[in-house]
Image (cartoon, rainbow, N blue to C red; front, side):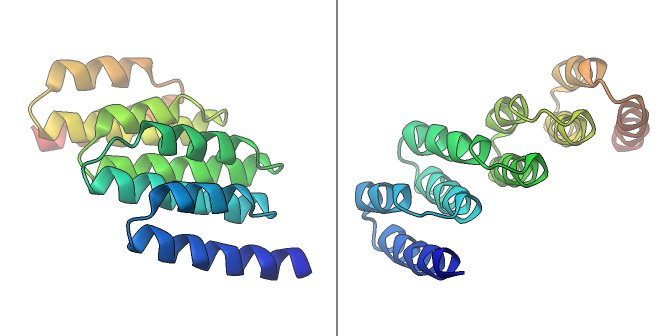
Length: 154
């Protein structure tokens, strides 16, 4: 329990550093968060905030992905990666969301991210790219759902 409280306190400090623009300090402090789920959340938030600011977020994103993959629970790791992918998709960066989805080992959840990326691309008018992604979706139920959604949006 002590580890969790310490992790939460460090997480709050990391978020304060991010808010004040001290990204390098935030990244260094996030490394010291003992709870892997909270550490992953901290790195994800750093990556998202750096990306939103228009700065180079590649290092922060790689650390966020690594932190998510370091989570012992596969379910928690998947949730962290999906959340990160959807953050980038919501920021208008479907390419990055698709790249993050590539790290998700759970077929159904990976397919869900791919489906949302494909639909976002189709909305932008990139229908051929969307179809390429849809054709690569491995979960047949998700693929069918995505095709029906695509048809209704065109």
